[in-house]
Length: 181
Length: 181
DNA sequence: CACGATCTGTTAAGTAATGAACAGATACTA
DNA sequence: TAGTATCTGTTCATTACTTAACAGATCGTG
Image 1: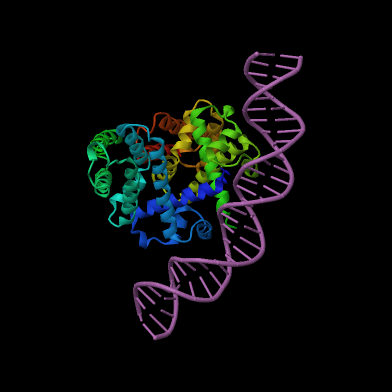
Image 2 (image 1 turned 90 degrees about the horizontal axis):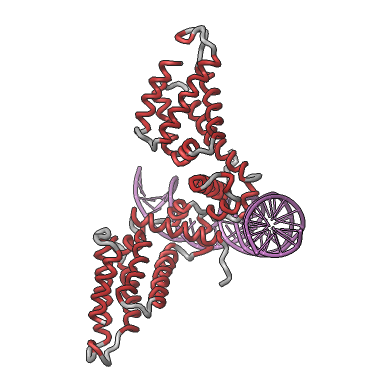
């Protein structure tokens, strides 16, 4: 790892934080590059040193989180579903402002789909339709079934402002995943 | 005003914030330049672009706040004591982490004295021993009397974790100042 | 429609911050 | 005591960010 300059990390952090904050306040399409640079306290031109435009910035922001989740899946591959999911919900908890904004706000179907695709891809590695409880079922069907329910539950959790602690969420989701995979 | 580069403001902000945070955790003498640069997420060498050493940094930090308080005194010169003091306590409230750290921590007599000197200087402008209720009193005595009591009350307020809202503090201090000046 | 205002994306020149290195100071400890 | 480790203050070349300016796009309003 070539170790990136801390200035790069700082401005990118500031920009991402600014976007999240602004998305709480207005629709993404109504957010201007100037809004973002003002909020992040960064020169407007600097944004273009890192991103093509505001859509690219949002993209990278989303992609980062998906990437992190993917890493978590790799590192928890040998855990059971409850403990593996616990690591995931810890990540959700820790980045709650992002996920709740992306899932609870009306105008963000883009992330929901991106999240769903990621989960489908992950669960496809878990499923085995040649033996066990899912023998004979269609892989596409069962994968889609589980991924959709997972997104739905996380959506519910975010939209309702964390009605249960994240570790309880992990436990319950873990049980349900265990039952279906 | 030549308008300073926002990078300068950002690093100075980060450094000041870092010092305040660290002073909650340990004695100022035990804080190293490295601690500060690490906490502020700034390169160590950068500190020396702005300050001579950590004592200079602390000095400037204190001086900034005294300077702001002085400006407040100028801008409130034509208000009565209650409303004028309200603007001051708003400033205390807004920078509570700084003032409480500086006044409530054991090892910070330096700021207390700096604050006292500032108040003496300010009250000297207010006092008139040639007429009114203080006619015949010694200027040094009355100025010192009022300034000491002011510091004492603010110290009490900080050490006891804001036992009353700042505007109540302002009102009561205003009455007491009115009575003595 | 024309207008003023605002936003965009890009450029250029200047400035601040960076990481890495350095010798010297100070402190711990074996 | 020597040896190790950490901190300091400074330097240097490189990089990222800054401001200011620019023309062109978009938008709402008279």
